[in-house]
Length: 114
Image (cartoon, rainbow, N blue to C red; front, side):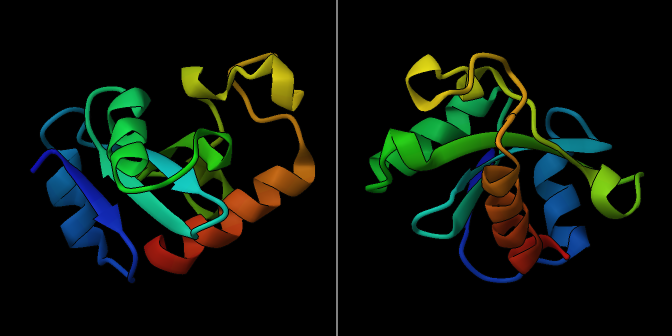
């Protein structure tokens, strides 16, 4: 399975196993900030995005990020994805601009990946 829905803590070893198919030292992920779940893996954020949509997430709650294994602390998370370009939700670029949204994303991401 290239993409895994994460709803409980996952080890770095398990995460690296998912990551090795495409990027190795980095893995793409999406977070549903409402349901507090992640989908990790795949070549594109949209792949993981679609998995969450198929599992009853709503698009407006899903945001993309990258997780870097070889970085430390807050630098491990990069809030950049094409799926984040949402003028209707006040995000006109690939990087999530809203600080409180980034904080929500980070809280859910670290709940499972730290």
